[in-house]
Length: 302
Image (cartoon, rainbow, N blue to C red; front, top):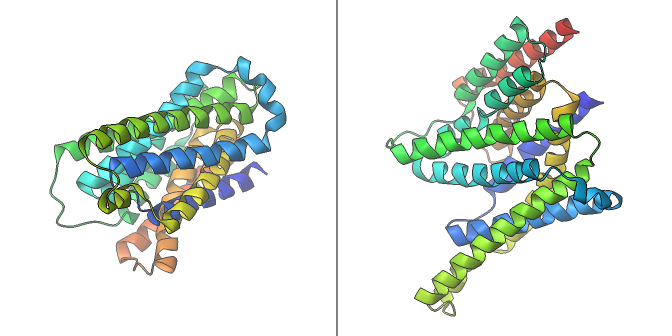
């Protein structure tokens, strides 16, 4: 059943990529509005699914809650800024490679068994990501892009680390309560930043004119997609956090990240009519090989 959940987690990650693409959230204020709405919807999803567990809230490991919340928040900001300065292709690649950090940490911290098939599989996942991610020629190199791309990768890795810490070291505490607290913290952070920026903007310009109203409005389509993104974020994080404790790190993080990127490339070709280059098709084949290597390595490890 856990491996079925792993497949669902990959599907949720793919849906997240597709829905995010449909959201128009250019500019800091729109980004914070979308973030706040997304985290609120995710909070409601987890709250409704685990209402009876909320009495355990006072027992939460708040350092891990805040660490996970900040990792999610800053990883999204870093990814958005990296895309702005250097394009989506390499930025997404760096972000996805954060799984190497969480995988290595899980293997060391919890002495998870590792063999040659696991190592080959992880290396192959990284290689497949480099092949699958679509190149964007003509983008000049910017040092700011490198800073944000590396930060996105690091914070992405921290998400997996904090998930693993919680489900392994605090298994007696409800996962629903943990995620409710995480999304509540992120909602508050996004709301505060949104309010600060809004009132700072209001001091400099008249927000009553049509141009500024358009800057704040995110559009009906974006609103619908933001609600959908919140649903996916809530369900996906619940699955991923559970899997971080149910399966070894060397399986969960590479498969979730590599599988999501590869499946997203396939869905983009089908839904958005993006043509897959030969090298991207090779990357998909390499990712399938990588997942098979990881599965064989886990079977051999017993």
